[in-house]
Length: 305
Ligand SMILES: Cc1cc2nc3c(=O)[nH]c(=O)nc-3n(C[C@H](O)[C@H](O)[C@H](O)COP(=O)(O)O)c2cc1C
Image 1 (cartoon, helix red, strand yellow):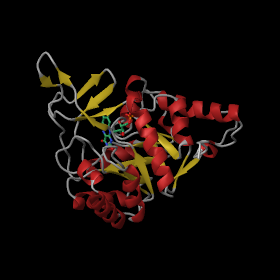
Image 2: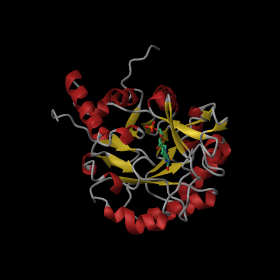
Image 3: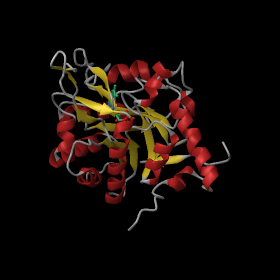
Image 4: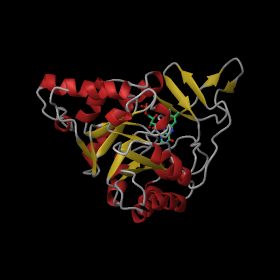
């Protein structure tokens, strides 16, 4: 559209445009194929993978709140081997696929990375931030020392571009990003869902069986934007912005705050074609404001000193 160059580089991955689908909200990609031309996207981040197949939490594990979606799926997935055998080959070869990796122990993360390393995935995103699993995930993402050890182990296990997905449920997200950079991560992705809960007052019970879940959707965009801004100031590695993006305006805001690319999550549930519309909206904005390339928007916020 309009001759605007949408190509971007995210942590060493050459992407056709800066709009990707977020992990856990696009399955393994194929589920969306009837609704979306995946080849028009910047890429997808597939559902987080564990070493062995995993069933998630019992229901109820997802609910709407007046301010967004609350989920506690708890990383149900087919496991890394079935992903490599069945899911990845079913996707168009030109689509950049980032695999997401999860474990309850650091060694498991390392092993999943090793197996993905030999595949055609464009990169690996480490889920160090799931807000509703009993072990792993958020624990790693909330403690700088554990996070450092996790990044070191994953770095040793793969030469693929390595993104670390950070938790918003921390005091200083900039500190966490610095730890990732120091341990050799190629980039950071933020944010995962915000830890939250919701209550059925008639039943006087938490709505989710797991009690705690992760809040996602438009309500968290300002939180995510603030964190992307802080992280972009704190590290030199690229940042991928995630959280509540439901239109081109939010995506552009993330780019201006320093994100090299963005991921769209919850918005795809209501409108599976939204990511392509956001891509076109970014191109239209660039054309209207005299930017030849979308990457010229990255960090172009004119903030008071
Ligand atoms: C139903 C659901 C499942 C998710 N599963 C994963 C997952 O497997 N791995 C992961 O890193 N993030 C997962 N997320 C978090 C999203 O990738 C994203 O970080 C978060 O929802 C914030 O973005 P959004 O507001 O655009 O949805 C999940 C989110 C939802 C709503």
